[in-house]
Length: 189
Ligand code: HEC
Figure 1 (cartoon, rainbow, N blue to C red):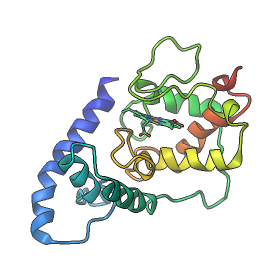
Figure 2: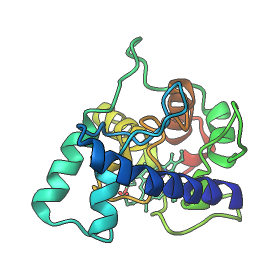
Figure 3: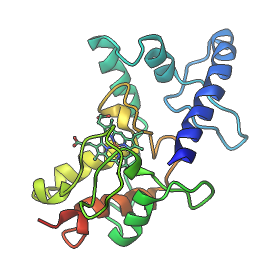
Figure 4: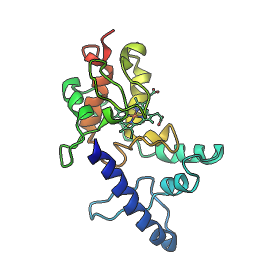
């Protein structure tokens, strides 16, 4: 639970250091603040605005942020959005660092109601697929939300799992299956 929070704190510090440099350079800011292959942290216009507005941007600014963030979303080339719910359960539970790092979803969400430990800063996402009739558009919307939460809520505290390369495409598909596979314990009525 702590390690994922630490990662956010460290990311915030790194961005804070990068921003003055970005302001000098006057470059167009890419949507993502993720480090590139050389480990250079790109300036993040969305993060700058969210900090400036204390996560409460005005309507127009929020719309601009959502539009910019939506452009970062890459749908799977094979057209399959749902992976393996059992691996997805591990992604949702795990926040271990390293190549197998997880989503830490339970730090903020109630998901499988059989789990006693969960955070509540995000809404309950129990029975997520069941409550949405396993609808294709809902699956696409949830993929987009998980890939880049700020495409839906401009200054969301939920990490941008795809856009910031926290999870791989396969891990996003797997966690999506955890939410949408009728066999997943998340969807027990
Ligand atoms: C740091 C806290 C945090 C973490 C970690 C987090 N979320 Fe969220 N999530 C939120 C918050 C807060 C919201 C609601 C506000 C918003 O839209 O951003 C949300 C919203 C959502 C929604 C939309 C819920 C709805 O109302 O339909 C889904 C789906 C979701 N999260 C899935 C996930 C998954 C899957 C993971 C793990 C891969 C995850 N979240 C990790 C905080 C978090």
